[in-house]
Length: 189
Length: 197
Image (cartoon, rainbow over all chains, first blue to last red):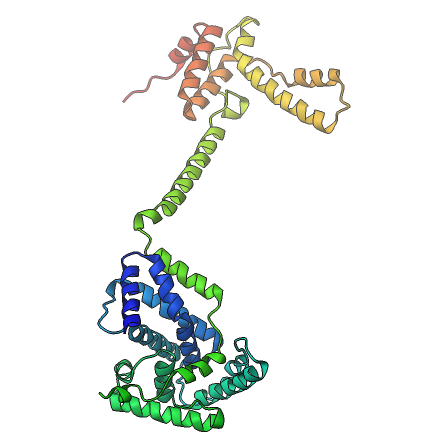
Protein backbone atom coordinates (compact mmCIF):
# COMPACT_ATOMS: atom_id res chain seq x y z
CA UNK A 1 0.00 0.00 0.00
CA UNK A 2 2.99 2.26 0.46
CA UNK A 3 3.62 2.25 -3.27
CA UNK A 4 -0.03 3.06 -3.92
CA UNK A 5 0.17 5.95 -1.51
CA UNK A 6 3.29 7.14 -3.29
CA UNK A 7 1.40 7.20 -6.60
CA UNK A 8 -1.35 9.30 -5.07
CA UNK A 9 1.24 11.70 -3.65
CA UNK A 10 2.91 12.03 -7.04
CA UNK A 11 -0.41 12.82 -8.64
CA UNK A 12 -1.16 15.47 -6.04
CA UNK A 13 2.27 16.99 -6.52
CA UNK A 14 1.73 17.09 -10.23
CA UNK A 15 -1.61 18.83 -9.74
CA UNK A 16 0.28 21.38 -7.65
CA UNK A 17 2.62 22.08 -10.55
CA UNK A 18 5.44 19.57 -10.26
CA UNK A 19 6.13 18.24 -13.75
CA UNK A 20 8.76 15.80 -12.49
CA UNK A 21 6.14 14.11 -10.35
CA UNK A 22 4.15 13.32 -13.46
CA UNK A 23 7.22 11.98 -15.23
CA UNK A 24 7.85 9.58 -12.40
CA UNK A 25 4.21 8.53 -12.29
CA UNK A 26 4.19 8.01 -16.00
CA UNK A 27 7.36 5.94 -15.89
CA UNK A 28 5.84 3.67 -13.26
CA UNK A 29 2.66 2.92 -15.15
CA UNK A 30 3.34 3.44 -18.84
CA UNK A 31 4.29 -0.13 -19.71
CA UNK A 32 1.56 -1.91 -17.83
CA UNK A 33 -1.12 0.50 -18.96
CA UNK A 34 -0.04 0.29 -22.55
CA UNK A 35 -0.12 -3.52 -22.49
CA UNK A 36 -3.49 -3.46 -20.75
CA UNK A 37 -4.95 -1.27 -23.44
CA UNK A 38 -3.27 -3.22 -26.19
CA UNK A 39 -4.77 -6.48 -24.93
CA UNK A 40 -8.21 -4.95 -24.68
CA UNK A 41 -8.32 -2.94 -27.86
CA UNK A 42 -6.23 -5.39 -29.91
CA UNK A 43 -5.49 -2.89 -32.65
CA UNK A 44 -1.96 -1.47 -32.65
CA UNK A 45 -2.79 1.95 -34.05
CA UNK A 46 -5.97 2.37 -32.05
CA UNK A 47 -4.33 1.20 -28.83
CA UNK A 48 -1.73 3.98 -29.16
CA UNK A 49 -4.54 6.51 -29.53
CA UNK A 50 -6.45 5.12 -26.58
CA UNK A 51 -3.25 5.14 -24.55
CA UNK A 52 -2.64 8.81 -25.29
CA UNK A 53 -6.27 9.66 -24.69
CA UNK A 54 -6.13 7.96 -21.30
CA UNK A 55 -3.14 10.01 -20.20
CA UNK A 56 -4.72 13.16 -21.62
CA UNK A 57 -7.68 12.58 -19.36
CA UNK A 58 -5.37 12.01 -16.41
CA UNK A 59 -3.65 15.31 -17.16
CA UNK A 60 -6.93 17.09 -17.67
CA UNK A 61 -8.36 15.74 -14.43
CA UNK A 62 -5.37 16.57 -12.27
CA UNK A 63 -7.16 19.32 -10.35
CA UNK A 64 -10.14 17.09 -9.65
CA UNK A 65 -8.09 14.12 -8.45
CA UNK A 66 -8.82 13.02 -4.90
CA UNK A 67 -6.99 10.04 -3.42
CA UNK A 68 -10.15 8.29 -2.23
CA UNK A 69 -9.01 5.09 -3.96
CA UNK A 70 -5.68 3.83 -5.17
CA UNK A 71 -4.21 5.79 -8.02
CA UNK A 72 -4.00 2.61 -10.15
CA UNK A 73 -7.75 2.05 -9.77
CA UNK A 74 -8.45 5.57 -10.92
CA UNK A 75 -5.97 5.29 -13.79
CA UNK A 76 -7.33 2.00 -15.09
CA UNK A 77 -10.90 3.20 -14.77
CA UNK A 78 -10.00 6.07 -17.07
CA UNK A 79 -8.24 3.70 -19.47
CA UNK A 80 -11.18 1.31 -19.49
CA UNK A 81 -13.56 4.17 -20.20
CA UNK A 82 -11.37 5.23 -23.10
CA UNK A 83 -11.46 1.67 -24.44
CA UNK A 84 -15.25 1.64 -24.19
CA UNK A 85 -15.41 4.98 -26.00
CA UNK A 86 -13.15 3.56 -28.68
CA UNK A 87 -15.42 0.56 -29.15
CA UNK A 88 -18.47 2.78 -29.35
CA UNK A 89 -16.80 4.99 -31.96
CA UNK A 90 -15.69 2.01 -33.99
CA UNK A 91 -19.11 0.44 -33.59
CA UNK A 92 -18.03 -2.92 -32.31
CA UNK A 93 -17.67 -4.77 -29.07
CA UNK A 94 -14.78 -7.07 -28.14
CA UNK A 95 -16.84 -10.14 -27.40
CA UNK A 96 -15.55 -13.31 -29.01
CA UNK A 97 -13.17 -12.02 -31.60
CA UNK A 98 -10.54 -13.92 -33.46
CA UNK A 99 -7.03 -13.63 -32.07
CA UNK A 100 -5.12 -10.48 -32.91
CA UNK A 101 -2.46 -11.67 -35.33
CA UNK A 102 -0.33 -8.54 -34.88
CA UNK A 103 -0.26 -8.98 -31.14
CA UNK A 104 0.64 -12.60 -31.55
CA UNK A 105 3.34 -11.76 -34.08
CA UNK A 106 4.74 -9.13 -31.73
CA UNK A 107 4.75 -11.67 -28.97
CA UNK A 108 8.06 -12.89 -30.28
CA UNK A 109 9.93 -10.10 -28.42
CA UNK A 110 11.56 -11.24 -25.25
CA UNK A 111 14.07 -9.85 -22.77
CA UNK A 112 17.66 -11.00 -23.05
CA UNK A 113 18.37 -14.44 -21.56
CA UNK A 114 19.06 -18.10 -22.34
CA UNK A 115 18.12 -18.62 -25.98
CA UNK A 116 16.25 -21.83 -25.31
CA UNK A 117 14.37 -20.34 -22.41
CA UNK A 118 13.65 -17.27 -24.44
CA UNK A 119 12.25 -19.35 -27.23
CA UNK A 120 10.04 -21.33 -24.87
CA UNK A 121 8.90 -18.17 -23.17
CA UNK A 122 8.17 -16.50 -26.46
CA UNK A 123 6.09 -19.42 -27.59
CA UNK A 124 4.20 -19.52 -24.30
CA UNK A 125 3.63 -15.82 -24.55
CA UNK A 126 2.20 -16.18 -28.04
CA UNK A 127 -0.14 -18.89 -26.89
CA UNK A 128 -1.18 -16.81 -23.89
CA UNK A 129 -1.91 -13.84 -26.15
CA UNK A 130 -4.01 -16.02 -28.42
CA UNK A 131 -5.90 -17.56 -25.50
CA UNK A 132 -6.44 -14.15 -23.93
CA UNK A 133 -7.97 -12.82 -27.11
CA UNK A 134 -10.45 -15.70 -27.12
CA UNK A 135 -11.73 -14.94 -23.61
CA UNK A 136 -15.05 -13.17 -23.20
CA UNK A 137 -14.52 -9.45 -22.69
CA UNK A 138 -15.51 -9.38 -19.03
CA UNK A 139 -13.11 -12.20 -18.16
CA UNK A 140 -10.27 -10.70 -20.20
CA UNK A 141 -10.84 -7.31 -18.53
CA UNK A 142 -10.88 -8.83 -15.05
CA UNK A 143 -7.72 -10.83 -15.78
CA UNK A 144 -5.82 -7.83 -17.16
CA UNK A 145 -6.89 -5.57 -14.31
CA UNK A 146 -5.72 -8.18 -11.86
CA UNK A 147 -2.45 -9.17 -13.51
CA UNK A 148 -1.33 -6.12 -15.45
CA UNK A 149 -2.80 -3.33 -13.34
CA UNK A 150 -2.35 -5.11 -10.02
CA UNK A 151 -5.85 -4.33 -8.75
CA UNK A 152 -7.54 -6.44 -6.08
CA UNK A 153 -10.84 -8.24 -6.57
CA UNK A 154 -12.67 -5.49 -4.68
CA UNK A 155 -11.12 -2.82 -6.84
CA UNK A 156 -11.91 -4.76 -10.00
CA UNK A 157 -15.52 -5.10 -8.86
CA UNK A 158 -15.75 -1.39 -8.18
CA UNK A 159 -14.23 -0.47 -11.51
CA UNK A 160 -16.36 -2.80 -13.60
CA UNK A 161 -19.52 -2.11 -11.66
CA UNK A 162 -19.94 -5.77 -10.75
CA UNK A 163 -20.15 -7.39 -7.37
CA UNK A 164 -17.05 -8.81 -5.73
CA UNK A 165 -18.21 -12.40 -6.18
CA UNK A 166 -18.87 -11.79 -9.86
CA UNK A 167 -15.41 -10.28 -10.28
CA UNK A 168 -13.87 -13.26 -8.52
CA UNK A 169 -15.78 -15.71 -10.70
CA UNK A 170 -14.67 -13.96 -13.83
CA UNK A 171 -11.06 -14.16 -12.69
CA UNK A 172 -11.38 -17.81 -11.82
CA UNK A 173 -12.90 -18.72 -15.18
CA UNK A 174 -10.33 -16.65 -17.03
CA UNK A 175 -7.39 -18.34 -15.35
CA UNK A 176 -8.93 -21.78 -15.85
CA UNK A 177 -9.31 -21.22 -19.59
CA UNK A 178 -5.83 -19.77 -19.92
CA UNK A 179 -4.31 -22.71 -18.05
CA UNK A 180 -6.15 -25.07 -20.32
CA UNK A 181 -4.79 -23.27 -23.38
CA UNK A 182 -1.21 -23.19 -22.11
CA UNK A 183 -1.12 -26.68 -20.70
CA UNK A 184 2.19 -27.43 -19.02
CA UNK A 185 3.50 -23.95 -19.83
CA UNK A 186 0.92 -22.33 -17.60
CA UNK A 187 2.29 -20.69 -14.47
CA UNK A 188 1.61 -22.60 -11.30
CA UNK A 189 0.19 -20.97 -8.20
CA UNK B 1 -13.30 -10.26 2.49
CA UNK B 2 -10.77 -12.95 3.11
CA UNK B 3 -7.41 -11.67 1.78
CA UNK B 4 -7.08 -14.92 -0.16
CA UNK B 5 -10.39 -14.14 -1.85
CA UNK B 6 -9.15 -10.71 -2.70
CA UNK B 7 -6.10 -12.18 -4.42
CA UNK B 8 -7.19 -15.58 -5.71
CA UNK B 9 -3.92 -16.45 -7.48
CA UNK B 10 -0.37 -15.21 -7.80
CA UNK B 11 -0.27 -12.60 -10.48
CA UNK B 12 3.50 -12.27 -10.92
CA UNK B 13 4.11 -15.41 -13.04
CA UNK B 14 1.26 -14.44 -15.31
CA UNK B 15 2.50 -10.89 -15.46
CA UNK B 16 5.95 -12.09 -16.49
CA UNK B 17 4.47 -14.22 -19.21
CA UNK B 18 2.24 -11.43 -20.42
CA UNK B 19 5.09 -8.93 -20.56
CA UNK B 20 7.36 -11.33 -22.37
CA UNK B 21 5.08 -11.08 -25.35
CA UNK B 22 4.56 -7.34 -25.40
CA UNK B 23 6.51 -4.22 -25.99
CA UNK B 24 6.26 -0.74 -24.59
CA UNK B 25 4.79 2.47 -25.91
CA UNK B 26 7.06 4.19 -28.40
CA UNK B 27 9.29 7.07 -27.35
CA UNK B 28 7.34 9.34 -29.68
CA UNK B 29 4.21 8.69 -27.68
CA UNK B 30 6.12 9.14 -24.46
CA UNK B 31 7.38 12.55 -25.59
CA UNK B 32 3.92 13.69 -26.65
CA UNK B 33 2.37 12.77 -23.35
CA UNK B 34 5.16 14.27 -21.25
CA UNK B 35 5.08 17.47 -23.30
CA UNK B 36 1.34 17.72 -22.86
CA UNK B 37 1.72 17.20 -19.12
CA UNK B 38 4.35 19.94 -18.86
CA UNK B 39 2.35 22.42 -20.91
CA UNK B 40 -0.78 21.77 -18.90
CA UNK B 41 0.80 23.13 -15.75
CA UNK B 42 2.69 26.02 -17.29
CA UNK B 43 1.56 29.29 -15.74
CA UNK B 44 -0.84 31.12 -18.05
CA UNK B 45 1.34 34.23 -17.93
CA UNK B 46 4.24 32.34 -19.46
CA UNK B 47 2.13 31.39 -22.44
CA UNK B 48 0.68 34.78 -23.28
CA UNK B 49 3.83 35.97 -25.01
CA UNK B 50 3.35 33.82 -28.08
CA UNK B 51 -0.02 35.12 -29.18
CA UNK B 52 0.97 38.63 -28.11
CA UNK B 53 4.12 38.56 -30.22
CA UNK B 54 2.19 37.19 -33.18
CA UNK B 55 -0.37 39.96 -32.85
CA UNK B 56 2.38 42.58 -32.60
CA UNK B 57 4.11 41.19 -35.70
CA UNK B 58 0.87 41.25 -37.63
CA UNK B 59 0.14 44.81 -36.56
CA UNK B 60 3.64 45.91 -37.55
CA UNK B 61 3.29 44.25 -40.95
CA UNK B 62 -0.04 45.98 -41.56
CA UNK B 63 1.35 49.37 -40.52
CA UNK B 64 4.40 49.00 -42.73
CA UNK B 65 2.26 47.93 -45.67
CA UNK B 66 -0.04 50.92 -45.16
CA UNK B 67 2.89 53.29 -44.84
CA UNK B 68 4.39 51.95 -48.03
CA UNK B 69 1.08 52.25 -49.82
CA UNK B 70 0.51 55.79 -48.62
CA UNK B 71 4.04 56.73 -49.62
CA UNK B 72 3.66 55.43 -53.17
CA UNK B 73 0.24 56.96 -53.54
CA UNK B 74 1.45 60.44 -52.44
CA UNK B 75 0.42 62.99 -55.02
CA UNK B 76 3.20 63.78 -57.48
CA UNK B 77 4.29 67.24 -58.51
CA UNK B 78 2.20 69.05 -61.04
CA UNK B 79 2.36 67.23 -64.31
CA UNK B 80 0.22 66.68 -67.34
CA UNK B 81 -1.25 63.54 -65.80
CA UNK B 82 -2.99 65.65 -63.12
CA UNK B 83 -4.80 67.67 -65.73
CA UNK B 84 -8.45 67.25 -66.64
CA UNK B 85 -7.93 68.02 -70.31
CA UNK B 86 -10.83 70.45 -70.90
CA UNK B 87 -9.56 73.97 -71.11
CA UNK B 88 -12.25 76.61 -70.59
CA UNK B 89 -14.04 77.55 -73.81
CA UNK B 90 -15.99 80.69 -74.52
CA UNK B 91 -13.45 82.80 -72.75
CA UNK B 92 -14.14 86.34 -73.98
CA UNK B 93 -10.79 87.65 -72.95
CA UNK B 94 -8.03 87.06 -75.36
CA UNK B 95 -4.94 85.43 -73.96
CA UNK B 96 -2.75 87.92 -72.25
CA UNK B 97 0.14 89.09 -74.29
CA UNK B 98 2.61 87.71 -71.88
CA UNK B 99 6.20 88.32 -72.66
CA UNK B 100 8.07 85.22 -73.66
CA UNK B 101 10.18 85.58 -70.52
CA UNK B 102 7.14 84.89 -68.29
CA UNK B 103 6.19 81.75 -70.08
CA UNK B 104 9.15 79.69 -68.85
CA UNK B 105 8.06 80.40 -65.25
CA UNK B 106 4.62 79.03 -65.98
CA UNK B 107 5.97 75.97 -67.62
CA UNK B 108 8.96 75.49 -65.36
CA UNK B 109 7.46 72.82 -63.20
CA UNK B 110 5.75 71.26 -66.14
CA UNK B 111 8.99 71.20 -68.06
CA UNK B 112 10.83 69.78 -65.06
CA UNK B 113 8.31 67.00 -64.82
CA UNK B 114 8.46 66.43 -68.52
CA UNK B 115 12.24 66.44 -68.36
CA UNK B 116 12.17 63.88 -65.61
CA UNK B 117 9.91 61.75 -67.73
CA UNK B 118 12.18 62.25 -70.66
CA UNK B 119 15.20 61.37 -68.56
CA UNK B 120 13.51 58.20 -67.40
CA UNK B 121 12.70 57.37 -70.97
CA UNK B 122 16.25 58.15 -71.95
CA UNK B 123 17.58 56.01 -69.14
CA UNK B 124 15.39 53.15 -70.21
CA UNK B 125 16.40 53.52 -73.78
CA UNK B 126 19.97 53.56 -72.59
CA UNK B 127 19.40 50.22 -70.91
CA UNK B 128 18.03 48.72 -74.07
CA UNK B 129 20.30 50.46 -76.57
CA UNK B 130 23.59 51.30 -75.00
CA UNK B 131 25.00 52.40 -78.33
CA UNK B 132 22.71 55.43 -78.44
CA UNK B 133 24.86 58.50 -78.75
CA UNK B 134 24.92 61.39 -76.35
CA UNK B 135 23.62 63.72 -79.08
CA UNK B 136 20.62 61.52 -79.55
CA UNK B 137 19.93 61.47 -75.82
CA UNK B 138 20.05 65.24 -75.45
CA UNK B 139 17.90 65.58 -78.49
CA UNK B 140 15.36 63.28 -76.94
CA UNK B 141 15.37 65.36 -73.78
CA UNK B 142 14.94 68.56 -75.73
CA UNK B 143 12.12 67.15 -77.77
CA UNK B 144 10.28 66.23 -74.60
CA UNK B 145 10.07 69.92 -73.53
CA UNK B 146 6.49 71.20 -74.05
CA UNK B 147 5.24 74.48 -75.38
CA UNK B 148 4.44 77.13 -72.74
CA UNK B 149 0.91 77.09 -71.28
CA UNK B 150 -1.54 79.86 -71.82
CA UNK B 151 -3.01 81.34 -68.62
CA UNK B 152 -6.27 79.64 -69.44
CA UNK B 153 -4.61 76.27 -69.74
CA UNK B 154 -2.61 76.90 -66.63
CA UNK B 155 -5.73 77.94 -64.72
CA UNK B 156 -7.49 74.83 -65.96
CA UNK B 157 -4.68 72.74 -64.52
CA UNK B 158 -4.97 74.58 -61.22
CA UNK B 159 -8.68 73.91 -61.09
CA UNK B 160 -8.03 70.27 -61.84
CA UNK B 161 -5.57 70.13 -58.95
CA UNK B 162 -8.11 71.71 -56.65
CA UNK B 163 -10.80 69.30 -57.77
CA UNK B 164 -8.43 66.41 -57.10
CA UNK B 165 -7.95 67.64 -53.55
CA UNK B 166 -4.42 69.05 -53.98
CA UNK B 167 -5.39 72.39 -52.49
CA UNK B 168 -1.92 73.48 -51.40
CA UNK B 169 -0.43 72.80 -54.79
CA UNK B 170 -3.32 74.52 -56.51
CA UNK B 171 -2.80 77.62 -54.36
CA UNK B 172 0.93 77.61 -55.06
CA UNK B 173 0.31 77.39 -58.77
CA UNK B 174 -2.21 80.15 -58.52
CA UNK B 175 0.44 82.40 -57.01
CA UNK B 176 2.78 81.57 -59.87
CA UNK B 177 0.06 82.19 -62.40
CA UNK B 178 -0.56 85.59 -60.89
CA UNK B 179 3.15 86.31 -60.93
CA UNK B 180 3.47 85.26 -64.55
CA UNK B 181 0.32 86.97 -65.74
CA UNK B 182 -0.33 89.88 -63.40
CA UNK B 183 -3.97 90.91 -63.34
CA UNK B 184 -5.15 88.02 -65.45
CA UNK B 185 -6.77 86.26 -62.54
CA UNK B 186 -8.79 89.30 -61.51
CA UNK B 187 -9.93 89.82 -65.07
CA UNK B 188 -10.82 86.20 -65.41
CA UNK B 189 -12.89 86.18 -62.26
CA UNK B 190 -14.59 89.39 -63.27
CA UNK B 191 -15.57 87.78 -66.52
CA UNK B 192 -17.29 84.88 -64.82
CA UNK B 193 -21.12 85.09 -64.67
CA UNK B 194 -22.47 86.17 -61.29
CA UNK B 195 -24.54 83.50 -59.55
CA UNK B 196 -27.84 84.65 -58.15
CA UNK B 197 -29.55 82.79 -55.33
